[in-house]
Each structure stands twice: as C-alpha cells, then as structure tokens.
Length: 266
Length: 269
Image 1: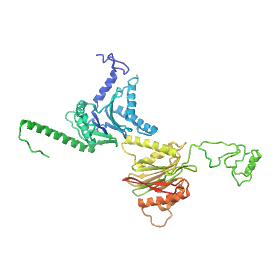
Image 2: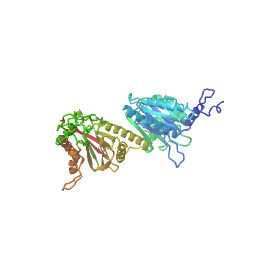
Image 3: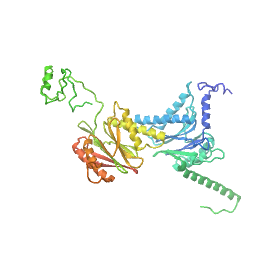
Image 4: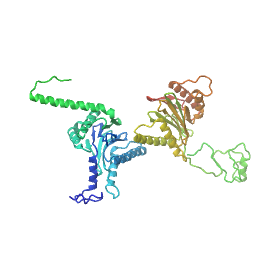
C-alpha cells in the first residue's frame, strides 16, 4: 500500500518495517537466468543456464572461479557480480599471502555479507543487484559447503538451492531429492544439477551444451568447469535417464491396463 | 646483519685530505697519518675490525644465503638444477632447503641470494599468476612469466630483491626455454645459464660442453639424460671449490609431459 512513497532511498524504512530498495534489488536477482547448486559430503556442483542476447551473441558466463577451492554462480546484474568476484578473488589471495593458507569459505562469506550490508545502510550507494551461490571446500576440515547471498546481506547455508528466473521448479525438484545428495557420487550430483536446470528453461528452448554450464569442486578436486563439448556426455546421460523413466512410466501404465507384457529391451 | 667477517669499510674522519685504507699492510705510511692525528699506534698494523677509530656501523638489509642454480635448454626439454644448502656467513643453516619453485607445470624458477627476498618474490609471482589465471582463464605461458618476472624485479629497482634467478621451462612451440636475470630485472633468453655463489665455476664449463664454445668437434643435440649427467659433474666440481655449494643437488627436468625431479648427493663439507 505504501510502497511508492517509501521506496526512493535505501535509507528509508517503510511503515511495515521493510527496506523497499533492498527488496527491489532482490527482484533483480529473480530476473536473472537460473542458477542451481547442490552439495554432497565431498563435492559441490553449480549449474547455470546461460542466456544470450540474440542468436548472434555469445552466452553470458555465469560460473566464476574464485580460488582453487571456491567458486560462484551468479544471477542478476552481471556487472555487480563481476565486481564482487574481483573482491572475493583479492580476499583469497590476500589471505593466502598473509596467513600462508587458503581462506575458509565461511570467513569469506562473512566478509561478503558485511559488504552487502554496508550498501543498505548508506545514503550514497545502492545494494548489489545480484544473488550468488557460493560453493566452497573448507580447507581445514575438508567439508563441502554451499552458501547463498542476496542483496539484503543475508547469508544462508544450503544443502541445495536455486536462484533466478523459473527457479521454483528447480527448487521443487531439489526439495524432493536433496536427501540422496549427501552420499551421491560426483557424476550423480552433476546429473541432479542438470535435471534441476531442465525445469528452468523457458518455453520451447531446451538445455544444450551451448546454454548449459556446470562447475564442480571437491575435497581433492580443484574448481573445474564443464562447458560446451565437455558437457555433452552428461547431457546424453540425462536424456537417457529421462527416456528410461518415461519408458518405465509407460510400462507401468500398460501393466495397469492389463496388456500383454512386452519383451524387456536391454 | 653485521658483516663481521670482513673489515669495515671505514673512512678516517680526519685524514688531512688522504683517504687511505688503514688495513693496507703494503703502505708503511698508512698508519703514520693516523699516528700524527693522535689516534693511537696504528703504524703498519692491519685493521682486523676492532678499530680504534670511530666509524659508522651500518645495518645491511641483505644477507647472502649462498647456493648455485643452473638451467639448460634443450630441443624439447629444459633442465634446471640447484644445490640444497642454505648458509649464512660460515655457518650452514640447512642441508635440505630447495631453491627451485614450480610456477606452472611447464616452468620452474630457481633462485639464489637472500632467502627472504627469494620467498617474497615467489609469493608475489604466485599471486600475479593467479590473477592472470582468473582474468585470462588460462595458465601463463613461459615467455609471459619470464617477462613478468623481469618487470617484478624492476619494480624494486631502488631497493632490489636480492634474488639471483634462473628461469627454465617449455615455450609455446614445445622447445626448451631458459632465461637468466640480474637482481634488477634485466633478462635474456639463453641456451645455458648459472647463477649464485658457484656461477663462476659452472658457466665456463657449460659454455664449453653445452653451448659448444671453443670446440672444434661437431656440435650435436644432447639428450636430457646426458645433460643431467653433465649437470651432476658441474655441481661436483663447483662443490669442491665453493664453500656455499654442497650437500645435495635437486635436478628438475621439464618436458611437455610434466616435471620430473631427482636428487643427487654431494659432499657435505
């Protein structure tokens, strides 16, 4: 009701106790194309749907390396994300130089959350219009972590998450299956991430090696990207899996109808 | 760090226009000048560092931690080797301190000089290479690292890194590439180089055997196994004469398939 009167400045509260500028910034994240993250006990996988402005243009990169053991997926204003990535990279290098060891992702996330919060409490700046999914391995305890940041400065840790346009279908899929992620193998995690992404594709488009991208890291695995041809085997496996499941569904239906059982194809 | 092993570089404060080094034993008048100034009987005496005259003690920010590094470029390989002795003055601080630092899977930096400056230089290079990797999304090529190292050293032109470097690796054509540096970033791609306390013993040997200078027989391409044996011989000879070289040699052979390191024991005296 009062939205328009109290939304000019980030330093103005609305009567309901909301900072409307921050909420508008969060809307910007929802406009970005989808990004998903899943984690097991040993690995974290990030997946993203890359958008392209037109047929002629390239697809926008959404997964960025921060350090050997930390990577991010972005949704929202790409320029803001790149600025944050630069900051995070510098922090990682600085920490390694000063303390002689890789930074703990939790520590970096704390600094990142503070950086977001600062923009919500000053007159001359605006909140970052980007949400990040941060995948990291704790170098001391060798545990896998997935964090999500948003323009408000809130930071949460997740078993699995999805942000961006049409990400609800991904979240629904992840909610159904997240319990199987903890012990899953890396390949299975990648398939799960791709499966979640399939639901986020708009209309007639489909997930291909051009517009999909995967990044993963693990206990003994440095940040690695899968794009283009490297992604094709996983897409094929996904297609195979979905075809089998459809066939299983069809078989179930036919049995219910009482048809003669068909020979199993192997 | 006080250079107590050497006589201090002192200027006599009141020397009547003369600037004679009082440690000269060949000039019988050297002591006399001081005598006439009433600074005590220094006629003809050798100054062993405990002097009667006032002079300025300086703190030297540099220490020399010794050692020798060698790098040789081949047709499709590069060999880089360094001894593992760390010393200060006449003392040995460690018999097993590596002077080789792997920068990428295709190049290695070997540095002798002041260890703390060497470590700092390595940290700085590692950071710069990581940023390059972030921004360019690929690893730096060997010639690029060579240029960056030269620039990094020149950055500290007026308070240099006391690091004497040899840099060896595989270039983009698959050939061996070796670069030699001075402390302030002047560098050059060479087929063969050596640096450190034993450089004067090794360079002439390698000039003849590897670069084939002053020889009348046919030059032929050497295999990496042959070069490794030559390097071992060079270090043995160097270790005999140079007190700062010895204990062990770390030899790294870089090819397009990666880096192989071997160790070779030297005399521990």
